[in-house]
Length: 321
Image (cartoon, rainbow, N blue to C red; front, side):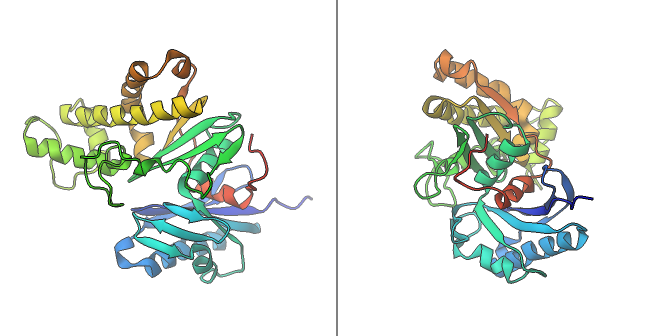
């Protein structure tokens, strides 16, 4: 009998939660867990949480694990395994790979890359990007990140900072971002951005009949209210769609992708509310030749950690498609 192919463990480190999954070579999620990031408690606590989740998955597997892949927000140096800067986690020059290796119950390689790059790889190998040599992945969760596949290759740029779309300032007079700039894309295109917009509309009193209130307001509540026809929730999602449409218009013109894949918790849940507004913006701002053949689809991955697991197998010099 042939030996079973080694498994991988992927970890998606977000600003609000950490998701981990035991993943087969074919991209199937065999086991998964998650826990709040609790970044306010400090870097060491976050490292302990990641290691605890990984060690729990290692204990569940009867098959050998080839390695651990970790997707982190921010600017990552994959060769060194270091997160150079992650403003949403308040990290600077954090040796993430070394920290996790020292906390594991067995000796395994740990691979680290930007979370949006990892998720773009996941979509290319196992998700909505399969068979597509030119696509853009946009992860819309508590923040906003982008990963780009160009001619079958992951485009990382000179310093692994390509497609840092969340911190493109769309409005110089807009809301102050965690990075110190104003009007960054993720202040308006994210679950956090949607909540902030909803709070502003609630404070304005413009929607007295709304189902929403400021107590425990969340992006999930906004989407649920929109499904019930709530006007305030619909206005928030329409505005989010308009900003998202501008971002996609830029990608459409500069890169000419065949497909845009929308992922992230908020992006997937709100996808069908966002799509009409995005399409409207594209019709207004982009030549027909640039957007008529552009598919916009939701992510197909069962877990955000699947993409991170692909880092174990990924080699930059090989074509993905």
